Length: 353
Ligand SMILES: *[C@@H]1O[C@H](CO)[C@@H](O)[C@H](O)[C@H]1NC(C)=O
Ligand SMILES: *[C@@H]1O[C@H](CO)[C@@H](O)[C@H](O)[C@H]1NC(C)=O
Ligand SMILES: *[C@@H]1O[C@H](CO)[C@@H](O)[C@H](O)[C@H]1NC(C)=O
Image (cartoon, rainbow, N blue to C red):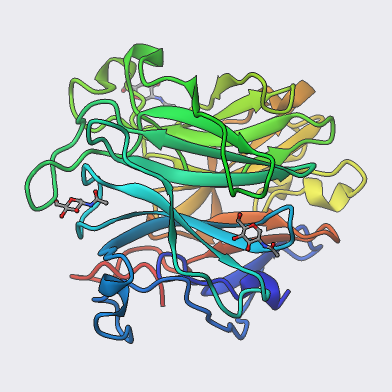
């Protein structure tokens, strides 16, 4: 477990590790964390002046994710920009590789440049399937927001793209759109967390819809609505599944794991054992969502290829409207990395402690 949590970056500090699926739920541990930095922006406390800036000048970094490459190295990918704000026209995807189990990291390299003629790219998701690397991300299509120093900031997401690599990411195929902005009346789609492989081999890539202006996504009334991209042919084709969202909060940045039929204890959702257990036959996957409600929400995917999802409901795990990440270890323990707070610290953006 130590190496699993050695990857904390400033966008994702681990405050607690919740072990899901144990008989007494939920269990939260304070664990010792070894930090190894992949990249520090120059303004980050403790960074060496000039280092970040001279090494490529990223003033903004966000949406980090980790995966093992087929060649045995560990890769961290994120979105970043030479501007200090989110959604800059030159926001790109970067990555860094560690070949010593997260002790040291290579200088960051450009993974996906901005989409011409100057549209930001977002939310890299890497997936290794039988030696082939898959990369999912989104690229803005039009400006659905307007922030940043120049007011030119784009809101997250757009078209969702997919590309593959047969050489651990040294070279990549051309990107293909698998879920266009134009679907569902035109609303940006975004990815941020790794996909889950179900027991039958189907893939579930968690996505969400985030319109942030009246003319971007309003027709759907689904700003902050989560979904899944289902692939039953290992990435050759994808179909969207929409999840309901309550009126009370948005549900974004879904994280999903496959449930294992041979581990009946894993069918028990955190905090909802008695409520959900009778309703869900044939549970296939568990999804958690970032919210504005102070706690995480949860939904269970069930039936063939997890095409049905329960109405998302709050669970007993705090969330200050920040991303969480859930994973399954090889021995079948589910891990959740999250910020154990129910709101932002007053006057500050402090999503981690
Ligand atoms: C990003 O834009 C800034 C100006 O806003 C420019 O100085 C910089 O060279 C650009 N970087 C890339 C990688 O396009
Ligand atoms: C694995 O591939 C990555 C990306 O192509 C590369 O940076 C790294 O050095 C490779 N690792 C090994 C052990 O060959
Ligand atoms: C959300 O609000 C609308 C309008 O008030 C209502 O029709 C709908 O039933 C609500 N949905 C849920 C899930 O509560």
